[in-house]
Image 1 (cartoon, rainbow, N blue to C red):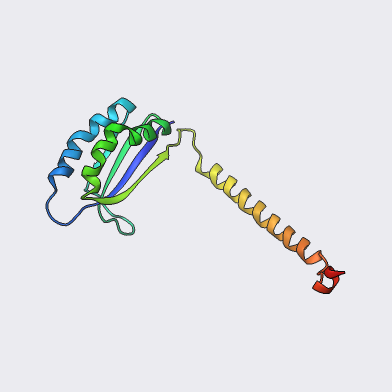
Image 2 (image 1 turned 180 degrees about the vertical axis):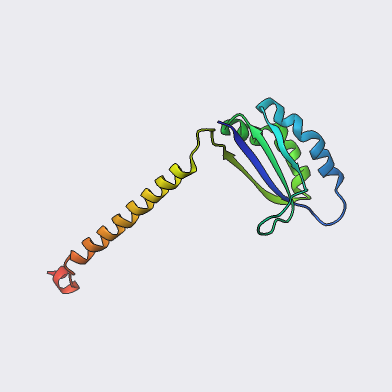
Length: 141
């Protein structure tokens, strides 16, 4: 199943550093052996809700294993400091969903799990109330 490496990068004030430009020039070659390709790459975002300082990068991979292998690869780790010395941000790897994915089925499963937890908690509280309270004097005998 497709996976995504998603970066929310926060640019530094001032002009783009040469090291960042070198990182951008070299990153695509590090992704190729793992089947990675840019789906989104840039700083132009349209904020329609909340705040979004910075830029967004989305890289698609054939699967989570490939995404993790790319991120941990010597080739990527070699160039990573070129970016991190100048840009802050967050990077995540997430699995995608297939065309058969049904959000309402996910909501139903989440609702059932929540309700089970609430029932279990209520049952445990009732059981705790039913237990006789032992005083320390009784326990010492």
